[in-house]
Length: 186
Image 1 (cartoon, helix red, strand yellow):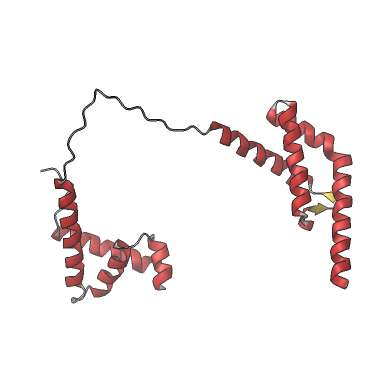
Image 2 (cartoon, one colour):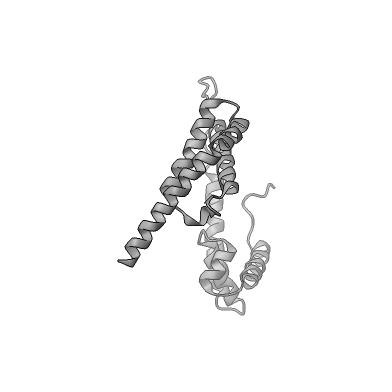
């Protein structure tokens, strides 16, 4: 029962403050919006979106003295305007195809080299797991075969980021010495 009355009182208080904000500060908010948008319809839409947002959220943290927090309202208008402006600037990439250009035949040799290098990395990691570098090889294997960043991997393995970083660095240096890079031009 007390929760219902408290909730009812908060809703009533919120409605009172929202009405007071509209009466006292609508003109100021509207002028701020006009300064941003430079036209009346967009300014009206912007201020209306603020009031709709406040009405939907009913967040009592926005209260300031006996009305709403005007600084928050100003920041809301500014961020809403910037977001709408940025959405309007997005362009769609288009690609033109020319029938006169002949496609070169796809060279699968580089793909084969990449697959051979991948397999040789896996074999070398398996070989390293039986040596003194077994821990580094295991960490590098996790990193190499996953899409995780070093810090994400450190969290998963519950070790420090520096440990993961140094292990990956040691194995990379070792593998560069042992395995030929398929992208090097001879």
